[in-house]
Image 1 (cartoon, rainbow over the protein chains, first blue to last red):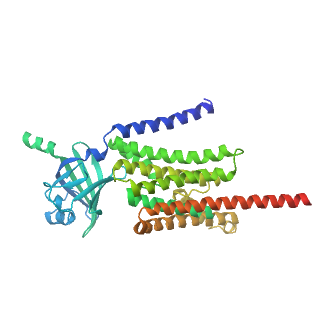
Image 2 (image 1 turned 90 degrees about the vertical axis):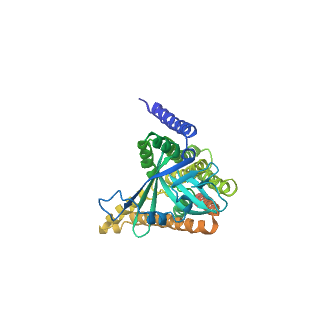
Image 3 (image 1 turned 45 degrees about the horizontal axis):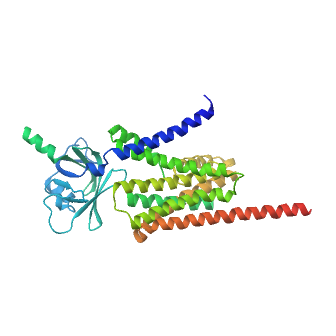
Length: 162
Length: 235
C-alpha cells in the first residue's frame, strides 16, 4: 500500500474516532444524569491497608458516623440527588444545603456546603441501579471505604418480591 | 534552555490548577490511555468516550503545532510559525480562565469541555517544543525526561562521558525542565489558593513572555547574521 494512502487512512481514523467519541458523549447518559434520584445505602466495606484477610469488615456505626461527620444529612442512609444540584437524606428543610458536583471525566463526586468542599468520593461504578463510591479516609488508620448504593425504586421492588 | 524552562513552568502551573479545579490532569496523557482501557473494560462507554476525546484533542494540538511549522517554511517567517501555536495556546488558556470567571456552573459537561481545551493547549505546547528541538525537549510531561535523566546519570558513571560537554549540557537542560515543571506546579497550587482562576491568567502572562522572548531571540540571530554577512562582503 502506498504511503499516500496510509496517511489518508490516518486522517480518516482520527476523524472516525473524533466523530464516534463525540456521538457517544452526546447520546449516552452522563454520570451527572444517572446519579439523579434516590439511592439507598446497601453496604459499607472497609479496606484497610494494614489489615490482611479481613476485606469485608462491617463498619461500626460510630466509625461510620465519624466518617460522615461533615455530611450528617446522609445519616439516615438515603441519598437524594436532586436535579438542582442539592443532596439530602430526608425531606428538604430550611438551612444550609449540601450541593453535589460531578467532576473529572465523571469519576469524582464532590460535596460542598456554602461553597466549601466537605467531602469528595471516587465514583467506582455508576449505572441506572447501582452506585459504588470510594472514600479515602485517614482516621486511626489509612484506608478506603466502599459505599454501595442502590436506586430506591429497585430496592423497594426487591422488598416487595421478598 | 530558558524557553524550555518557561514552557515547563507554565505546563506545571496548568496541570496543578486543572487538578484543583476539575480533578483532571491536563499536561500528560499517558495515564489517560490506561484509564480509557479501564473505562471500556468496565463498560463505561460515556467516560471512555470523554477520555478518548481528550487524547484526540492533545493529538490535534501537537499535530497543529508541527503542521504550522513545516507548512510555514518558506511561506512566512520562523517567528510566525512559532508564534501561532503559542497564540493558540494563550487563547485556549485565556478562554478557560474567562469561562471559569464568568460562565462556569460546575456542570460535568463544562468540566469535560474545559479540560479538553487545556489538553489541546498542552498538546500545542508539547508539539511546539518537540518540533523546535527535534524531539529532544518535551515540556508537558516528565516520563521520557526522567528516563533520559536516569540514562545520563548512569552514563556519567564513566569518566569520558562526564567530560563530554554535549551530554553535560543535555543533563543541565533536562534538570532545568524538571525543576521548572515542579516549580510551576507549586506556583500553580499556591497561586490557586491566592488568585483562584487568576492562575490561568498568570499562565497566559508567562506565554506572552515566551512569545516575546522567542521574537527577541530570532531578531537577535537575524541581526547577527546580517552583521556577519556585511563584514564578509566588506572584506
